[in-house]
Amino acid sequence: MNARSRLSTVWLTVVGASVLLFLCLPVLIVAPMSFSSAQSLEFPPPSLSLRWYENLLGNPIWIDAGKNSLMLATLSSSAAIVLGTLAAYVLVRGNFPGRHLLEANFMAPMIVPSIITAVALYIFFARIGLLGSFTGLVLGHTILAVPYVVLIMQAAIRSFDIRIEQVAATLGASQRQILTMVVLPNLAPSAAAAWIFTFVMSFDEVVVTLFISGTTTTIPKRMFSELMLQVNPTITAVATLLIAFNLVALAGLLLLTRRRGFPGGMG
Amino acid sequence: MTEETRDQKDAMTPATLALEAASGRPQAPARRQGRVRWDLVLLIAPLLILVVAIFDVPLLNTLYWSTVDDAGNPTTEHFREFAESSAYMRIIWRTLVIALEVTAITAVAGYALAYWITKLGRRLRMVMLGLVVTTFWVSILVRTYAWIVILGNAGLVNRTLMDLGLISKPVQFLYNELGILIGMVNVLLPFLVLPLYAAMVRLDERLLQVAETLGASRLRIFWQVFFPLTVPTLAASCILIFILSLGFYITPAVLGGGKVPLVANMMDLLINRFARWEIAAVVSVVLMAVTLSLYAIYQWIRERSA
Image 1 (tube, each protein chain N blue to C red):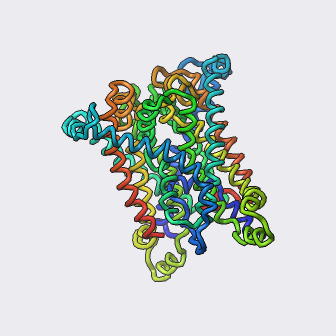
Image 2 (tube, each protein chain N blue to C red):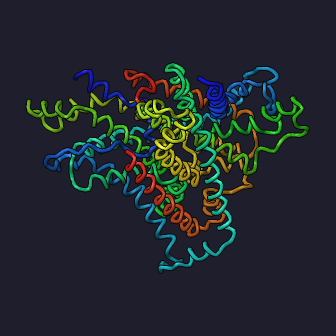
Image 3 (cartoon, helix red, strand yellow):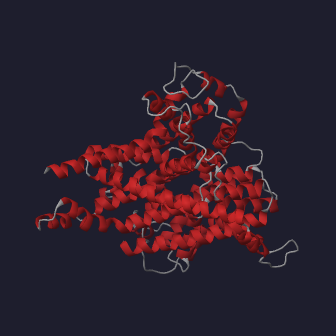
């Protein structure tokens, strides 16, 4: 290696590492700040305390928002998993005309910017009287989760050997038996991974929620409106808890998919 | 079940999930020949009904709102009002400019990061990719909020710069265009880095070895062999980032402090403050048309390079 190429290697390392630091900085900085004793957002914190966590957990508005978020994420991701898995199975095995059109339609909520979905649901829900209702919120979040479920479950079903289903059929299993006794049990790990994925997405969703939730508060909605008013260190505690929550979910997802090794699927 | 099918079944690592999420496109469908199984089609009905009722119909309803007047007669008046208003046009223009800036910065920074990661040892590579995927998992709101902590007047960056004596008063990073750029690039980087990394690793090493054997310098190998081979993925990712930038709501609202409204924030105001649903519907239709056209180009590039 000559001097010039060594120099370019050094440059690449400096630039690459800086970009990575820039990417990770927000995640790294929030957690220490949440244990600060100071009222202002000083870094490094002058001394440590749990006051912002006490503040947070002692506030019924945040507790209520947390309950709503959990309920909303549970209902919407469960609904999306059930409907999405059945649909994914049909899309992969069904072989009927118009299949690609249906698939594109199911993927659309992922491609359409969420602000457009938010405005569309606002106007539509206002017309049919679902605006501000919890039902409307669950329906909206379910729609946002559908593309990811269909995507993940289609991949899982596609890699499930169709000959196993054919053997079951040869042995006299009905279509219903094949589905409930052969296919679905084998899809359980992927379904669990998809459920975690959509749960986290719903738990973090802001834009559609802001438009259609009315007076119902969720954690990200509450956080967003507090941010717009003033910078309050309690938010730092919320943010830290959200990071921890997302990382635990990521770990759960890794456990479910660990056989292939971590980023191995990317190579 | 054979070991192989089991491996395939569990191939959905977070990285592939993130990749697929980022690419917005399912794997190429495996065509199977055989009879149509109508018994299965019934199973798809519940989801189809839900998506039609809660997604397709609302979007069509938006289109309807943009094209009728109060009495329900067809009109182009709303589109005309939108096109003739310099206030709307200024916001549209600024959104386009910011989206372009974000795309350019993300492309350069993300390319460097992805390239650097491919040069690392196997173990370190996993760690770095793990970090990228981790940030991808943290909510946009949290990451946006963190910049207030980092870039605020008493924040980490300003304090460090002042302690070093480089500046005498805090630099205004937030509540302006700079703050929006920083926040958006930060959120969008993984959407470029992950697919680009995958493309770089997939590249046939032998091409580079041939160039080396033929005596090309490292710089020349990079610019004449390596880089051109990654251009399709780079272009596709840039289009994706541009599309995502156009619809950004949270980051401009929080880091722009309401002073630099983009299209999405304008739609929020039109709905929630001014109750001008018909103009919000017009903006939706325009944004939708732009997004779908760009998405078609994105798919075209991906299919061509696949």
